[in-house]
Image (tube, rainbow, N blue to C red):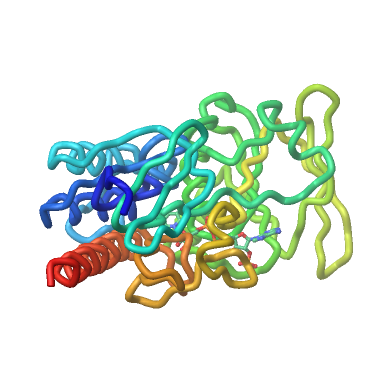
Length: 312
Ligand code: NAP
């Protein structure tokens, strides 16, 4: 057997990964968190979290920072690295990064999901020129300007709420006439004078030479197009998983999510999965934290059982 570097390596330091780290170190295991970008995951961009039990209101950034310091304070190690693949070495796993490899007894994949794009022809080129996927990060650039938010989930509604506080006008463009996001958010937005709902509508074109000037929108029911002048468009149409690096070691579903049930066990013994990157029906902060705990305790139990067997 190869020399083991860590009991558990966790790939991804969002809510699921950081929670898994807390449970792992508190169970006496050595834990390494590997994160490609910055710790915190998707919640870091949410202006206000108001549905996490026991916390009335907190910014996503503060929530993520508290969680990170909690995991580090308890003894979890943290590194910035991009994982290229995981190799199954039987009793251990080899995690290969861009410049090194590490051996662990168990692995927890908690890579979350990335922003879905609208797949418009010039969408990529217009990023930073009016197109954004993060209202909290870029919203201030659009103070006193007209902007649009695309999407009908909680992210779109929360982004619209945030932007309506300092943009002149906020259009919410959604492809249906009912929202996937919480109705109280939509109701509050309806009361705002500077918010306009553009429903049953899809964005067909992003117009502008060097900077975004307007969006062309088609109402699907009336089959009519309309050009809305805006300086910014915030695209919040959900997420897609990013599990390509693991597709040859664990089974993915047709949409690229890692197949697992509520026990967070993947098709490969010793590899567990937590949070938005696995097959599940509810993707919330609470369920990410829950998965982190379940996956970590399952990994600890797997390691302990293996160790007992090796001693016999
Ligand atoms: P989401 O709930 O999946 O909503 C995505 C929205 O984008 C849907 O309204 C969908 O329309 C629309 N959409 C998807 N593909 C589209 C396309 N190609 N063109 C136009 N519209 C498209 O995503 P989300 O809002 O990012 O939220 C993700 C998860 O995080 C959810 O479970 C959400 O509740 C959670 N979340 C929680 C908090 C919080 O706890 N404070 C904050 C933000 C998000 P349809 O409705 O027609 O499918």
